[in-house]
Length: 196
Image (tube, rainbow, N blue to C red; front, side):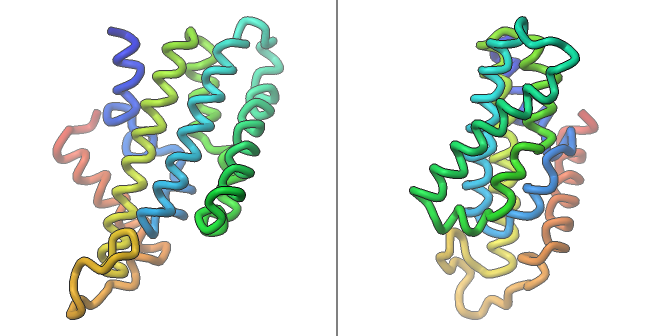
């Protein structure tokens, strides 16, 4: 049962964006379209799961005083893999995400889960925690991307859905639109599910 809880808590109860409010920089910066948000979510999830696995495997061998630099080296290895794979196989998403791919190295979600969970728990629990947190992060930024793209462009995944008479709200694809969207999402989440 604990393994299932390790997985599910990151999706809603401890969602990194809506509840813990970590990883907001990429969530706000790359959520102007569904495609970009999904690309960032997949990249962050891959790094989160892989780094949690390796850190959990090495947790007994890592000296407590050296853990943060070691975590960053492990995380940056997986970020480099993601960066090169995206550049090779999806150059348009790689270009759209730009500097936010290398910044995954210092993403609070990934470093926070390494420190708070993977360093203290067995591999299977750490894997499920990383997967749950990654899915929770991805779901929220994709939803943000859908809202912002729909209201800001009248499209979803680049395809028009609101017809030719729709007047887009340009603010939604600009940075203030990201803050408005996440603010409303947090308010709705608190209204429906309460504080926790």
